[in-house]
Length: 192
Image (tube, rainbow, N blue to C red; front, side):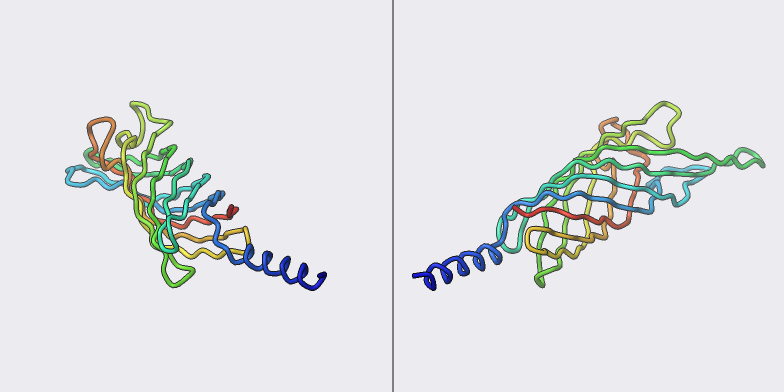
């Protein structure tokens, strides 16, 4: 009887260890390089490459072995600089674009540990004033990337190189200048 009970406990433990969790909550930290894309706007100046950071919390739900849906809440701080010309004088300016973003992302898994993701972000610029660098970045943006995720039991670690363009559909009705980020997101999460 003890042998049967031991085998049953071991079998249940193995099934639990290899069963795939449907949900995940992850803490996210990211670094990026950014610029302001001016589209077809004619200007006497331009924007330089800047840097940014992201902090956030993600929730994902597995639909099947190859598809999951992810959302979350992210805070980003992008440092932006640029220059303009007036006569023979060049003016340099620096600024920050701080945003809260809510991503809605579809993740497509392949080769067991790799995934591609694509989706939308709802962005809300928190520090916009009439003297801000560029136009207001609140609106709908696009995000895409590739990633590597590995599960250690209930713990998931991931690295996600990504690309974002904010303000594609602007809440301000004017989207001449779009913040563009490219970087890496790192995360650790819990599967349940």
